[in-house]
Amino acid sequence: MIFIGIFLSMATIALICWLFFTLAVFALPLFAGITAGTWAYGTGTGWPGAILVGFAAAALTFGLGRFLLATVRPTWARLLIAAVFVFPAAAAGFHATHGIVRYTMPSQTWHMVFSILGAGVVGIVAFVRITGRKTFAPSDEHSSPH
Image (cartoon, rainbow, N blue to C red; front, side, top):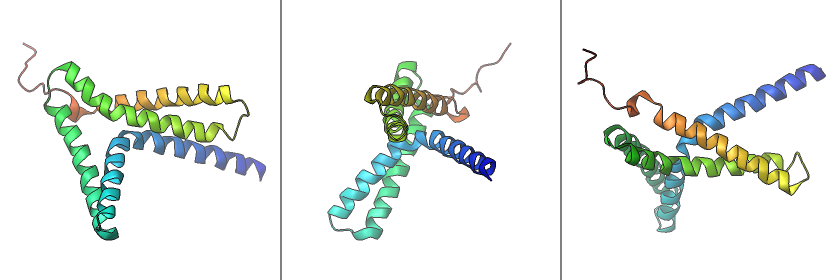
């Protein structure tokens, strides 16, 4: 029984890490959606209106980012657009790692060390996922190998 519990714990941790790395790309759209939804609720739209505004803002933010990365040609501009999506993902990685390690080790110094490492890893993964998609790559339709 103990073996099954250990195996299930490791599988759960692996699933949560996979889910977090997959969803880190959406940190900026999520933040934009929550901010817009909170603002809409504060202006009196109620829950349905706030949810609708939040989803619209998140979709618009994500769609605008994909569109800009697909159409902008200069590398420096593409890196700047990717950085706008990577920094919130890295911040989310910092806080997620910090939330985990504060229960596993007593030293504040090691909390920060692992939290910064977690932020770096999540930031790198988010950058690779954002810039490595086929839809973000410049089109090679007009160039021929001959």
